[in-house]
Image 1 (cartoon, rainbow, N blue to C red):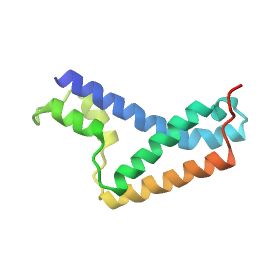
Image 2: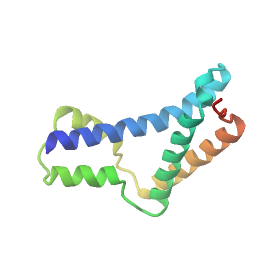
Image 3: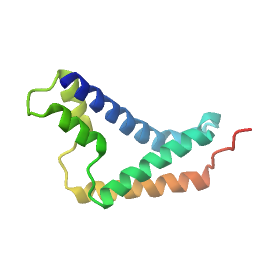
Image 4: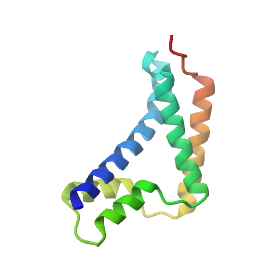
Length: 123
């Protein structure tokens, strides 16, 4: 089960990385006129994930991936090296109000980017 829990953690990490990189690369791509940043499906997934995370924070809902990982681990047994490293990057020891504010600001940024740099409808 530890390997499966590590895979869930890795997936969680890559989703968080996708969201964070999108917050930076979309405006950077607009500046450098990268066409892929206007991909509608990519932008829908990005915005949807960011808004989902913000809703979780506002309503104090634990992320389903966090719950699944905890259920798979069942104990506080030592994690693998990579799981430990990803865990340190993903879970910060800060108050929930910090994350709620951060996620709401990021959601506002995503909505602003959607309006300022709208995706293009596929042809």
